[in-house]
Structure formats: structure tokens, C-alpha cells
Amino acid sequence: MTEEIGLEVERQQESWFGSWLRWCPTSLSLLREAEKVLLSNLKRSYRGRYVPAGCCVGKEESHVWTVSLNEESEGVPLVLLHGFGSGVGLWCLNLDAMAADRPVYAMDIIGFGRSSRPQFTKDPLEAEREFITSIEHWRQQLGLDKFILLGHSFGGFLAASYAIKHPDRVEHLVLADPWGFPERPLDVGERYKFPLWVKAVGTLLQPFNPLFIIRTAGPWGPKLLQKARPDLVRKFSSLVKDEEVIPNYLYHCNAQDPTGESAFHTLMAGFGWAKYPMLQRMDSLRKGLPITLIYGSRSWVDHDPGFQIKYMRQDSYVDVQVINGAGHHVYADRAREFNDIVQSIGIHADAGTLPTKTNISTDDSLDQSTRDAGQTITDMINVRYDHTDDQQWDHTGT
Image (cartoon, rainbow, N blue to C red):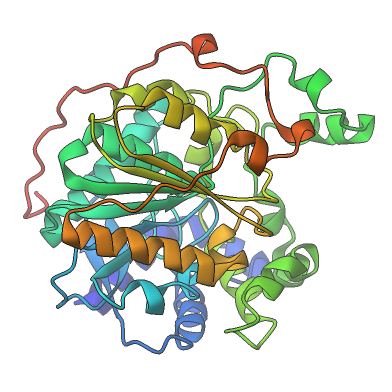
């Protein structure tokens, strides 16, 4: 059945590929093989399958590629949402440890990886709703009741949005270096002293999708990615010895029809910010919903929103952890520490308790020059999530 759905997903994208494949050497079958090579490093057995998500985006039925481990466990399930331009394969340093005591489900977010790539709306709030609807339809199909929801970067943005819309489904919200939380500063040009040429290039590239250069490079794309991001190879070197595996996987994730990337472009206001920042909406979360935020001390992502959320929700559990020496890919830079934090959250969720909060302040976690000290909660405009109920999805897909 999985092979049949996979062929259907490939068929739906053939119209986009066409002559493009003669220039851009990629296909869903090559992505499938690249992922298989990457996940072959896991010690635990895993199951990969397409989960139907109904017509959550557009008029055709979408399918969400899902990798699961230890499904027979009775522990509280853990659901993983990857970051922008990524896929389930980059959780390879985490899956074995995270699945020790519970079921783990890692999905390729709709529009990314091996999942369907439908055309999203150009309205940012509606595009966000389409992402969230696809996750909820996926949950319904799998029959998950409550789970720990962990999202990295753009996946963290979507995880928070999902928790606002479907609060009773989330046992514990874990946000790993989440993108799109702070409001874009009005004086961004003054605050960040970019060279003139960087500003010029930024202005020139603004209309394009963030990763269009990988596709434009055609047959040179894989090598370009390998040369441009050697740090990604090093992050996974403890598990993945072949230096071409990670760049090859990421290339095939991002050289295809960029519908998820286009939707991300619709949501963003400059690469580092969202048009509708999530921090402004965090007071809409269910009271008492536990939240853990995990940052890398060397990440470009602003840590301040984590501490602002902690201040905003003093009557609820909010823990902010900053892993020393880790960058934006905190789950890979310091995989053991990251896995330990997530495993502790899972053990406490099983027992109906909460982990001990980390005693850390914003001054301890950030260099003064990198902090947005002037941003306060009172500066925020209260933009609440649209709680209009979605139409009930028929599990038959009709």
C-alpha cells in the first residue's frame, strides 16, 4: 500500500518535474533512497508509511510520509516536526534514544520531504491553517489521543500553532530553537549592521524562495550544498561516516517542487521573522499546558521569547534550557544532551509529573550584544489564533 501511495505522490509531481529533471538531477525515488541510506544507521527497527491527510490543502488528497518506532509501547507518544528545508532523516541522531520508552512518530511536514507537495494559498494565516489542518488530519488517521509535540525551528512555529488550535491533544509542548516567535524590530537596519553588498543581495533575492539557488544550480546542486554547509556533515559525523550522505539527502529534499518552501516564504517577513509572530499569540495557549524551550547557546535564533513566555505564563509550567556550545541545529550539535532533556520530559509525562525547572536567567544564556533588551511584552499586539472550527474531515478521504 505504501508503494502504491508513493507512486501516486510521484505521479502528482510529474507535471512539475518534466523537463526540469533534465537540468535538476532529482526525483522522489532518489530522495527515498537517500533517506534509506541515512536511516540505515539506526539501531532500532522503524516503519515508514504514507498517512492520508485528506484534502487539507487544495482539492487533491494529500499524504504525509511518516517514520515510526516502538509503536507497541504504552508510553506517551512523541511526535516530531522538523525544521525548514529538512525531513525525517535529520532526526537520525535522536530516534533511537527517544524511542527507548515510547512510540515516536516523525513526519515530513506537508510540502517537504517525501510528503505530498500541494499548492498552498498565498494568504499567510490561511497557509498556516493549512499546515495545522494537515497535522490534525494526520493525527486523526493514526488515532493518537494525546502526545508530546516537539518542533524544531519552523516545526516549532507550527507546533505552537497546533497546540493553540488543538490544546487537548498536546501533553507537553517542546520547542527547539523555534523560528518565528519575536516581532521584527522596526529598526532592524540599524540594529544589524549588514555590509552594503549584503543588503543589496538581500533586496535582490527577496522575491525568491529561500532555497531557489539549490535548484538553479542544477547538476552542481549537491556539490554546492556540500561546499556551502560542511558544518552539517560534521554535526552527524558520529553516526554518518560518508560525507556525501547528509548533503545528498538535503539536496533531494529541496531540489523538488518547493510548495512548502513557497508557503514558508508567504509566512515570513524577512528570513528571521514571521509576518504573524507566535509570541504575540502564546497567551492563547491552554492554561496549564507544560512548555519546554530548548535553545542552542550559539544559535542565531533570539532566546528572549523563551523567557518572555516564561514571564507571561507564570501560572503554568515553562522551562527554558540553553545547551552550551550548540547552534541552531541543537538536536544534532549536542544530541546526547538534547535527547536526555526530551527523555526526561517523556518519563515525567508517563508518571503525570513535571521535570524540575532549570534555574537560568536571560542574562546567563545570552551575550548582551545579541539580546533584544528593548523588546517587552507590552510592545506586543495581541493577535489571537482563529478558533473557527475546521470542517470535520471524513476518514475515508472523501
